[in-house]
Image (cartoon, rainbow, N blue to C red):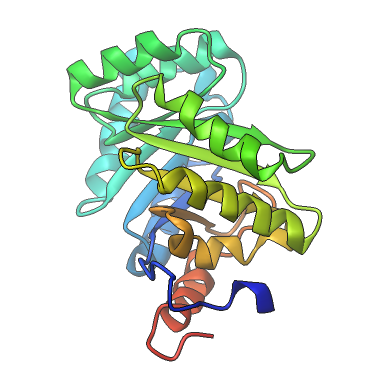
Length: 242
């Protein structure tokens, strides 16, 4: 972890922790939120990981989402769906006006339309790009953020798999390069996998405004549970640092 020690030039801005939920029942969702509520300021419901969610009617989904929103009082609620685009887009549209943020894949064929619709409903949009096999070059990462700006999204996220410490450094440096632009969107930069775990702690020094943690079950490779991540970040962003 030596190359990630803070320097005098570090931004030292602590990202918000997002609790990403991988739950099978509504009871589990409430239990996870209650267990980790003191260690996060954002809650993400990964609807694709919830059995049977695709069969819910609009009324059923809206009712359940409103219940989760009420249980998350005082925290932002994000809705995410990875899977069939048609089903996912229907779920994201149903979440508009209830969720604070919806996560839209950058390659979604309706990304621009979804962003416009969400803005009209007062819901923010997080545009995400994932690379689950490899880490792009740092210049490619910076360029990816620039391209994602064109969607009109409020927050831009790049998450890529780190197979080495250098991969993690490349991701963070690419994110920092984008954040050097005079006008840039808020970003999230995550190096997935065990080699990238440090990025979940220190990415605020490279411009990231959010970091992801899990509850009892991870939703992405390399996640810490929210309590552990909170404790690591508390130490990292203290005056003493690591």
